[in-house]
Image (cartoon, rainbow, N blue to C red):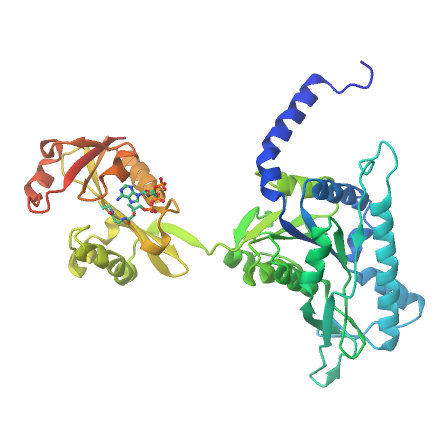
Length: 435
Ligand SMILES: CC(C)(COP(=O)(O)OP(=O)(O)OC[C@H]1O[C@@H](n2cnc3c(N)ncnc32)[C@H](O)[C@@H]1OP(=O)(O)O)[C@@H](O)C(=O)NCCC(=O)NCCS
């Protein structure tokens, strides 16, 4: 039994593996762009990252790696006695600098290719036959003259030849892109690795951009790691500017999700991609959506939401004045400044029943569990306020309520006050849910 792990370790491994199954299925066949700066290559954990990349590839993830080269370029310039020049934090690339860039990039590429070629027995690479490919897939153009300063060979991405890259991915290769691009005039340009990562992710319609960074993610004002955020929140987080630019820029341009994880933390890539908690920051495209108490300013939005349904007879007509009086009973879901859902909670004197009224979701946003979210909110509020039952009157939505624990009840079981107001012409049905 020598060398066997304790049974508890084996069981937790089995549990972990089972929990990872949905992620494995989900990631299969997806395209992930992984970006890391030149500093990551100097980190002792980089060899582990290579092993984890190989594992991702074995699980059917299509991978494009993009490396940076800043420290390696600096080293070469220092050896040549060249002082680096910058304008507004952007490197100026003259002829001697572009030589250092080509030199650094060539050397990094061979180092990375060598790491992916290791296959010694008992290593995580054993049995893996990984082909790392590259090519002239990035067309570049000069940044040009800014504030009178000629940036010479500092360029920006003009086009990423996504179809050629996809063909290599289809053939089971990992594609490695370097931060250089070529112009139609045959010149080589020095690119920002972050810009290249965004452009490549967008051109490839990647499912994710994962940035391996010296930081473990984005942080809030109190220095706490933000595990998950949308674009608006990401923009207000504390982060190195270029790092934030990459993750926000990719999502803004259509990449559904981007992640920042630490390159120094062993297993960070696997934890981020195969566990619910993750270990870095996930930025998603989803716009900010909040459920909050309504304010007077929301009345026009609520009216616009309710009116079509009132016209169809689904909801009882409510005047602007009535809504203004009752605004403190209303809750809304706001999405990017638009009111897309609402619900209200009404009380009746001396009754242990509260009424759920006006629950509505804009037709464009239905079937996204927003109705459910509004109902849960109203239910928990009614419970907190000491009510033991929640009732609703409906003409056309009976089944939606029944499927959520409401039971059909006789009118006589509603609070007296409500019975007095009942509109017999509408002939609504009453449903009650015990809380
Ligand atoms: C009822 C309503 C609020 C649900 O909002 P939603 O955000 O789409 O709800 P959810 O995503 O939580 O639920 C969607 C489910 O409800 C079902 N559903 C929607 N309207 C329904 C109805 N009238 N009767 C029965 N089921 C209904 C959908 O088919 C979907 O079912 P599925 O999960 O099996 O696919 C929304 O359809 C609405 O605004 N309807 C018009 C207003 C209304 O009738 N309000 C009630 C007045 S008392």
